[in-house]
Amino acid sequence: AQSVTQPDIHITVSEGASLELRCNYSYGATPYLFWYVQSPGQGLQLLLKYFSGDTLVQGIKGFEAEFKRSQSSFNLRKPSVHWSDAAEYFCAVGARSGGYQKVTFGTGTKLQVIP
Amino acid sequence: DAMVIQNPRYQVTQFGKPVTLSCSQTLNHNVMYWYQQKSSQAPKLLFHYYDKDFNNEADTPDNFQSRRPNTSFCFLDIRSPGLGDAAMYLCATSYGNQPQHFGDGTRLSIL
Image 1 (cartoon, chains in turn orange, blue):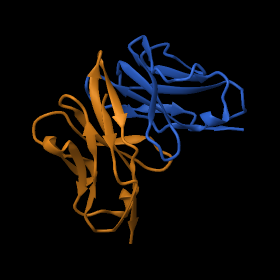
Image 2 (cartoon, chains in turn green, red):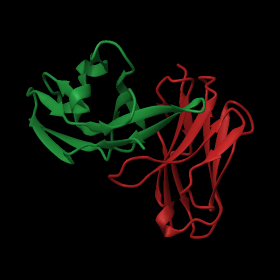
Image 3 (tube, one colour):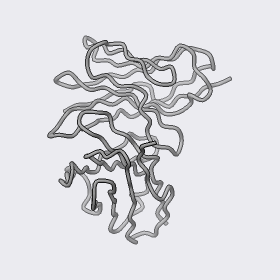
Image 4 (cartoon, chains in turn brown, green):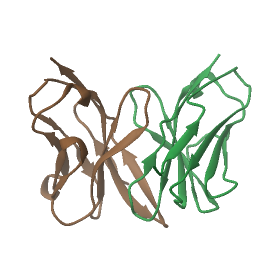
């Protein structure tokens, strides 16, 4: 069975500072990996995805993530955080199963941005 | 813009009173999902429809049912809501191996 670990429940960064959110996954084959962001009271918005190919993927809002198979990691990064990035971030691993994609989410990392 | 729309955004019901949450999509995706998300937790998949085929997760309580009358609409029915069912309910859609698209959710409160 697939699983995702986000070791940081809560992270606080200063506006303008760099950001890295950690994600480790467990899956037997090459996974589909995702990062979603959720603002309070909202649904999940896809930031970026990795299916195959280049291990450094670019997403929306200036985010990027790097797939490292040897470390089973898919960490999310942003060089300069903006106050509007304060939200909860979910890493997820997906697997094709009978024509649909079964996605398992991590428990999320809540990002606080201070002035 | 193509999207996933959930109605209502906020729903209040009484303990034991049946409630229905609605989801519609303009993406023409063949798979629709319902997730339950409790405060500060990951979304938990309740069930999904692959076209007209209903697929229940093993640990989804019998109290939760779903209907998909056509490609565009999917409903979540909670037959006898308990206090523990208070949560955000998220609808999502997908096609093939593309990522799931989520609606903004319905926040359900139980009195």
